[in-house]
Amino acid sequence: MFKELNPLLHSELRLGIMSILISVEEADFVFIREKTGATAGNISVQIEKLSEAGYIEVNKGFLGKRTRTVCKMTQAGVAAFEDYVVALKSYLDVKQ
Amino acid sequence: MEEKNLNEQESLELISQMIRNTKQRLEDGSGLPFLIWGYTTFFVSMAVYYFLNKTGNPQYNWLWFGIPVIGAMGMFVSQKTKQKHSKNYIDRVIANIWTVMGIAAFFTSFSAFFVRIPVLPMMILLMGIGTALTGLVIKFKPVIVSGFIGMASCVIPYIIHDNIQIVVFGFIFLIMMVIPGHILNYQRRRNHV
Image (cartoon, rainbow over all chains, first blue to last red; front, side, top):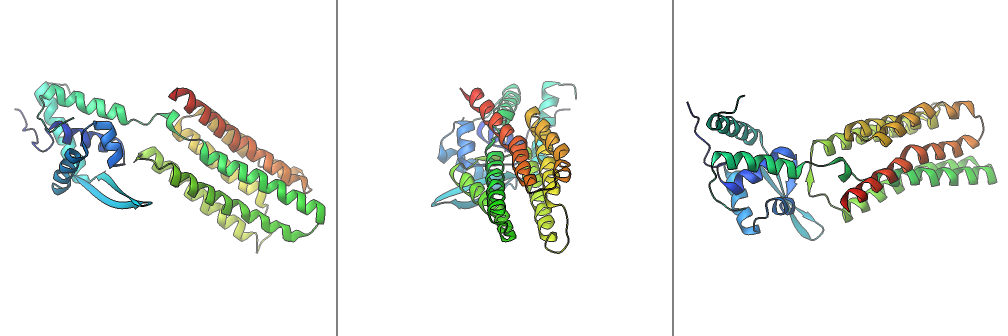
């Protein structure tokens, strides 16, 4: 029986952001933009969606005079990511 | 990267690729904190020795407090100029190790106001433990070895009963922190060429 893939994660950029945040404890906007190669506007929109779902925590602060947005995955985000990978495996018939 | 749906195979590949890309390599670690604390300790030790030897005035022992002041300033400036864009588990573990070591060092030096304790050997032991633990966490042999050399050297000031133990203390920090700090930076530069 196939598990349903979480539509919120089954999108290239959102999955990319979640994969980055699962491997580092926290990352700022610059780091995410550098690793994904996406535009700032697009990243902002996707970060907002992930934050609204409670998957990531977004903290806005200042670094000197510039603003710095730092993202961190929440427990709910880790659980959703794990579920997504399990579902993915069932599709790909990967031995667990 | 855009907002588009992927097939299952592409999703798995994307996850692996992102994790690979963000994996902080050992070479990315900076030797700068070791250099800041190592050189500060070395030069302050030499200054304390020089003034104590020249004047015999024990008030010059207050110069030791230059180590946390200069070291903290150096760390503040280096972090301000070179902001890291991501923090991983290793960064947090290392930061916690040195916070604990810093607090232990503070209590040790504070206790010396009330009880006559061998501060120099205790400092070498504490910083040696911190260095060895850091080396083990980042899996970098020169830092591990220098940490253990430092820990073993903590007996040396016990053997020497003169102000010369201050000079020895400075040189132990040179071996324990400055040398691995430079090796770490050299390794990083070589890997980024």
